[in-house]
Length: 533
Image (cartoon, rainbow, N blue to C red):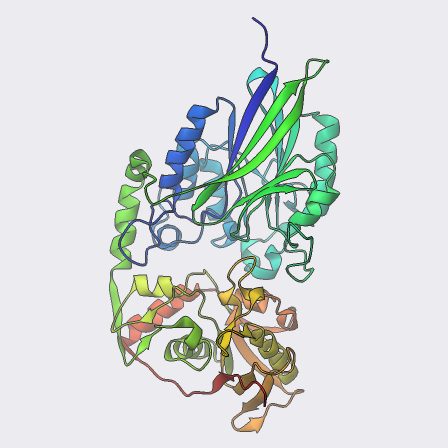
């Protein structure tokens, strides 16, 4: 028989699934168009259509839902649900995301061991020997007809800025771009594959069409630069930013499939025979395959996790206390413009458990609804969705003012309504409501009619102007204490003390011990907008 003169290979990528196996967001009843069970139906369809197919996960699979939180904090028995899912769906490889470290290395290593596929990590290395800490930096897959595709895994090196140091002990995080550059050169020289795919748990720092910067040049996301500086790369699969992207940059096919299993990225590579009998890429196409309302959930996959899901739902519906007074959030945008009982509650808890005199906290998403009269675990994890711990850092009054000026950038004038809106920088490339903090322990006013950098028009403590040179102990979540969210003025400040307990547990325990919590609001801050004054 004559060998075919062309072959089409499909590469499917999931990323930032964040523990969504079932098609639910755990906030209420009803199936949502998301989750691995629905993606599984798409994967089955694509496997039927493409004899040559690779299925890759690009990180952040171990954290993000009550389902995963319950396993990590309360269950922990048997094989990790994410590992079971990777094995059941027959993934060919996975890459580590930043949230893989949130529950410590023991849990991560068990998940890697039990997942049935290699986890690729080129730039996360041993602190002592500089060797890839999780085994394989890359893998070469030999597909039918002799096509060989190399897949290299790299992860944003910003993790030490966010993560609990005990969760990454013994690890070093090399610059993702530079590590990828070295390894791609090695792969091309030593392996001579027909195509090179970089699977990068990171995103794009520039607009893909114009090349204009979309964020400060921090190095957290380097995807755009990778497309120009990595010689010999055919495909760049990305994540971390939760964006829906598919296209081409500088001849490199790129894709990013959103988050929570809302879509799967698909790259098609068509190869043709060369005169020497090898393969050369003839065509590259990138697309997204979204989960639709009518996409069926894979019954077999659901059955595999039915008991885990039952225990999670039972735990979520446990009442843990009650709220006296109004702690609901009917309008998150309004709650970010003036002191609110729910935000004050979170700040007061942070101050009480740490002894700090000042606190800052965020309403993380626009889906947060605060607490109604009856409080369950579902209410806690729906409002506080991240596994943050707390740090008390020593700041000057000058640092606090700078942080408030950064917060003030959340708002922009809305010319159509004459009021305020969320600034584009906090909506693109993904919503970043979690990067706007509300403060307790100081009195302040933000005037959005003023230029950026000069919007803090009042900053006092106990009725007196805040001394820019005085020092204060301020409690905040571990992400913010590392400078996350472009809060460079908070980075590398002296850490007075740390509370290693997950903030979700702190809130739940606080409510349980008291039985009833009471809404209060001292109205210590507000946002104003007075154009023309």
